[in-house]
Amino acid sequence: MAWPEDALSENEVIITSFRPHWKLLFIPFLWFVGLSIAMIFVVAYLNWAQWVIVATLAVFLIVLVVKPLVSWWTTRYVLTTERLITRSGLLAKSGVEIPLERITNVNFNQTVMERMLGAGDLLIESAGAQGQSKFRDIPHPDAFQTVLYKAREQRSLEMTGNHGAVAPSAPDHAEKIRKLAELHDEGLISDAEYEAKRKELLEGM
Image (cartoon, rainbow, N blue to C red; front, side, top):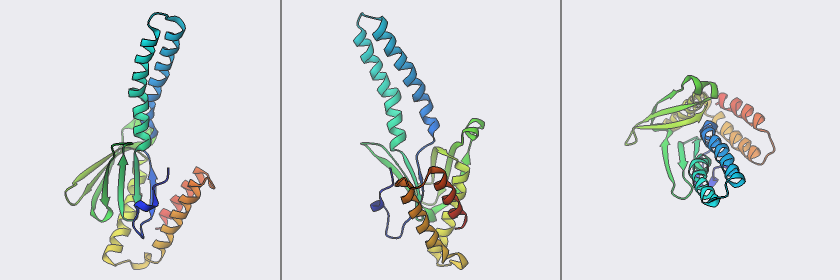
C-alpha cells in the first residue's frame, strides 16, 4: 500500500516507507498453527460440545492472530524530505509527525537476536513538546539512522538557504526516488532492484 500522495505538501517527496519488522508476526504465526491444530482435533475427535470449543478457539484466534496481524499491516513509518511520520490503526488511528529540522539526536538499539534478524528500536530526540519518540521493531535501524541523518542535514540546508554544492542535485535525487517508488508500486521493478537503486540514490544525496 503506497502512502497517499495527497497527504504530502507541494514539494515533499517520500524517501522511504516501511512497516514494522516481520518478527512481530512470528508469535501470531505460532498461535495460528497451534489453534488450527486444536480446532482440527476438536472437530475430528470430540463430539461433545465441539462447536462451543471451536467458537472459543476462534475468539482466541482473533485476539492472538488477527489483531496483531492487522496492527502490523496498518502501521507505517514514512520518511519524507520534510518530516518523519508514523501512522497506526485501522478504525481508531494514531500517529506522530516530527519535522526533520527539529530532530536533534537519533539512537538505535539492537539485541544480539535482533541484529541477526535485522530489527531494532530507534529513539528520536526532538526539540519542542514531543521530546523523545521511540520507534519499536523497525527493519535495519542502523541503516535507517544513516538515511534519516542525511535527510535531516539536507532539510537543514534548505531551511537555512545554505545549500552549497549539493543544492542542484537534491531535487533531482528526490524526484528520482519518487519515480523509482512508483515503478516499484506498479510492479515494474523487483524488490531487489528497487532497494539497490534507492540505496544508490540516497548515497548520492
